[in-house]
Length: 474
Image (spheres, helix red, strand yellow):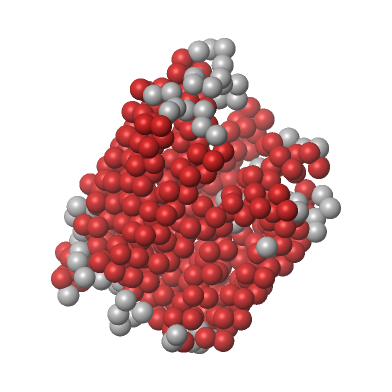
C-alpha cells in the first residue's frame, strides 16, 4: 500500500470521527436527562455545542491551513478532539460535558477544510474525483454508524463511552497523518486577516445558534432576535467590506468572481438543507405512521448509508471524466424522487410488507442521490482553487452547507408542527398515536418541500460559468 493511500486513509478516519460525532449524542439524551435531572431542551445543548463551534471554526481552520503548516493544523485538530472527548467523558456536570463537546467541535472545524485540501493536493494529478467519492461515502457511513455505536456503548457500558471511543480513533488518525502527510508551508497570517475571518465565522455561528433556538421562541424570543439580527447583519457587512475593499480575508477575489464556485456552494447548501430536513418527517413516518419496530427501522436507516457508500466512489471517479454538474443534477433528482415516494407511501399505507419494501427502495434512491451529488460538488468547488487558497475554498464550501443545514432543520420542524396542529388542534407532534393520519399529511407536505428544494438545486446545476465549462472540457 502506497504512502499516499495510507495518508488518505488517515484523512478519511479523521473525517469519519467528525461526522460520526454529529449523530452519536442524540441517542444519549435520555441517559443525560435521568442522570443530571435536566430537560430534553437542555440535554440537546450537548450536541448543539459541538455543531455551533464546528461551524464557527470552519473558516478560521481553512485560513490557518492556507497560511501555516497544514499538517500541524490537522494534528492540533485531532488533539483537540481527543481532549474534548476526554473532558466530556469524565464530566461531572452538564457544563463540563458541553464544554468538552465544544472543544471537539473546534477540532472538527479545524480538521474538515484540511482534509478536503489535502485530498486535492495528494490527488492533484489523477484520481481526485474518486478520492472525493470515497471521502463522501465515509461521511454517509459515519453518520449511519453513529447511532449504532451509541447503542453498543449503552448496551455494554454507559453513555460516557460514546465520548471516549473517539480517543483511540483520533490517536490512530494523528499518528498516520503526522507520519505520512507532506508538509505545506504558507505565507503567514496577519492580525487583520485573523480577526476578519474569525468575526465572519462567529457571525455565521450566531445565526445558526439563533435558528436552533427558534424551537424555544417563547422562552428566548429576545435572544433569538438579537442573534439573528446581529449575526446576520455582521455577516452581510463583512461580506460587503470583503468584496468592496478586496481584502481577500475570507476568499481570494478571483474565487469571488468565479460563478461556478459560488453556484456550487449554493447547490451544496441546498443539498445540506434537504438532507437535514429529510430525517424529521422520515422518523415520524416510519415510527408513528408505519409503526415499524426497531429492527425494521434499523434496516431502513442503514440502507441509505449503504447506497451512498456504493455510489459515491463511482460518482467521484466519473466526475474526473465527464462534466460533474450532470452527475450532480441526476443525484439531486434521484433524491427528489425518493422524497416524493416517501410522501405518497405515508398517505396510502399503514405499515406492512409492501410499504416497508417501497420505503427501502426510496431510501436507496436517496442514498444514491446523495452519493451522486456529494463528491462531484466537492470536486467542482476545489478544482479551480490554488494551493494558497484551497483551505479557504473548502472551508467556505462547508460553512455554506452548515448554515443552510441549520435552516433546513428549523424550517422543516416549523412546517411539520404547523401541519400537525392544523389537522387537529388537540394534538401536537409529541402526543401522536400510531398510524396517525396527521403524520401522513405533515410528512407529505414536508417531503414535497424537500423535493422542491432539490429540484431547484438540479435546475441551478444546469448552467455554470463559461470559465467552469472550459475547465470541464479540458
